[in-house]
Image (tube, rainbow over all chains, first blue to last red):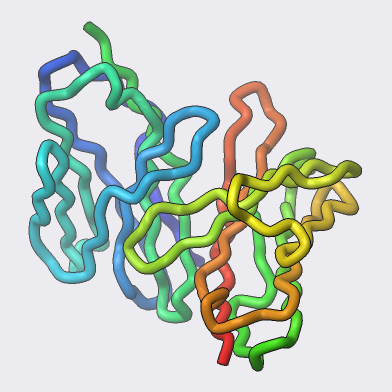
Length: 109
Length: 116
């Protein structure tokens, strides 16, 4: 079956760095997405990786290893507003999105 | 975790026709479901909130007469794109609230609509 795993919850300190991991087993691969979702709001697109390597975008970076079925989202210089759920989603060979359950990130002062 | 399905997975239709997309919560009851559309590498845009047994609440700029939503049961919501045009081509994603203490939101796999 198809599966996406990511931690349920993580806690980090303001100003620090946090890495949210995502592992996947899917039938085919057409890219991996990271979204940020604040409570009661629609998910916001953060990144899209389809090739191996690190994509950096400001304070956020996303890494992909297709051979390992692994990705991470790296958040630097954490701010209180980064407290949110972070969703990992993989697009399979049928261009269907397989969603992780999301990681709730709690930022403490 | 909970499962949300969508049908069809993809659909190609002619301009002017109507297309119905189904969203089902397979192992839980969902009082509230959401419909989103997504353009490539962009954020999900909330179209409407669907509540079982009542009229859907549409976001500003979304035509309720064009995007008909019916949430007839606790496990099924449908989105009908009426008189579809090429600019309606998009990826439509639904999600359902679990209604649990954590009120988790589970997303469907999406439906790719192409209007010729």
